[in-house]
Image 1 (cartoon, rainbow, N blue to C red):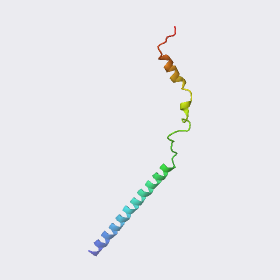
Image 2 (cartoon, helix red, strand yellow; image 1 turned 90 degrees about the vertical axis):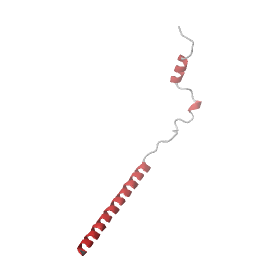
Image 3 (cartoon, helix red, strand yellow; image 1 turned 135 degrees about the vertical axis):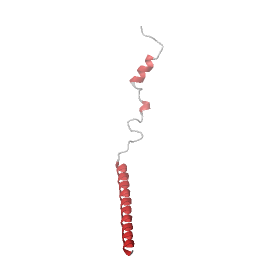
Image 4 (cartoon, rainbow, N blue to C red; image 1 turned 120 degrees about the horizontal axis):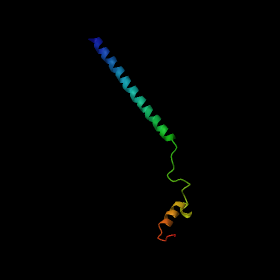
Length: 75
């Protein structure tokens, strides 16, 4: 009977070791994913190329659309 108790305790210790190793591996994987996300280049919310365009001339497409929607006709 003592052999069964020792075998059960050993099996429990091995199982506990496996659980701890899996948790540690999962934590390492999550840390690696977090580091990879932190290294990614983030796209700026407002590009420097967009600032100050309101003072510039409207684009050609918008001018053509507005010109074609006017009621005056060319014969």
